Length: 252
Ligand SMILES: NC(=O)c1ccc[n+]([C@@H]2O[C@H](COP(=O)([O-])OP(=O)(O)OC[C@H]3O[C@@H](n4cnc5c(N)ncnc54)[C@H](O)[C@@H]3O)[C@@H](O)[C@H]2O)c1
Image (cartoon, rainbow, N blue to C red; front, side, top):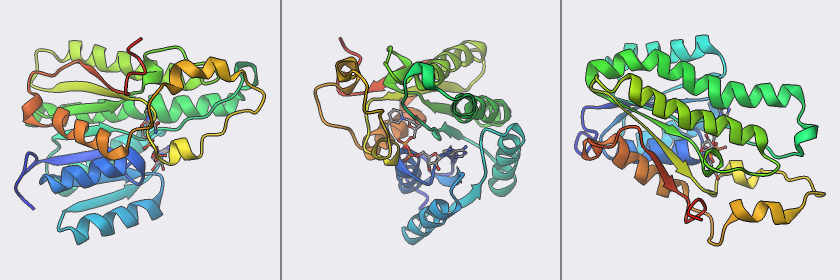
């Protein structure tokens, strides 16, 4: 590989073993990027490595838990040691669950904050000095849930709202540097996250209507295509944006 919008560039992607992260890794590799793929699932990363390698791409994988600040710092350092540079950070890993607000266990609350907020925060903190060196960019995966109230997923919406604000505030703080910081806010996408999503049986389903919407779910490839545009030089003017890809969920 070596041709395409990401020729000569290095992308570090979290959550790369599955769903949106995996599709993004495959897409950026096909467009010439060297991929540093991170996930908590070693098995998923091994299968991604096989897929990218078979297609002629260049990928290094590292398994770990992004809720751990040391792991975030070590991951960025590992990527730069392996590839010598960092052009794109994709904060994609995330978890979701639904329950009545009053039933959220403390450990589930702290885990979701750790994975969905601490991870992207400490990954960004470690990566930005390297992105400044290359004039690179950061793409966070937020959600329609970061832009609207969603019953029964209060903690998840809080974490994605934090990602929206992290994106905007980093865009402001680094506006005089060469880097770009953006977020993509997908609506429902068919991945293991939605397939495994368990909803308590005794909820009021009317309250879910505003965030289930009127159209079918999107695909991980849809989001990977948008990611590839935002992370590419074609999006040179896109900075501090929250780009929805939600089939109208947040339009009304
Ligand atoms: N699927 C949707 O409907 C949807 C909608 C909006 C936003 N999102 C967001 O998109 C992102 C990707 O989700 P997806 O739908 O592809 O789900 P997914 O479950 O297919 O992929 C998420 C990946 O993150 C990894 N991961 C989870 N915890 C981790 C940790 N502590 N450390 C490292 N890796 C970890 C998982 O192993 C998995 O490979 C998430 O941030 C999610 O919140 C998804």
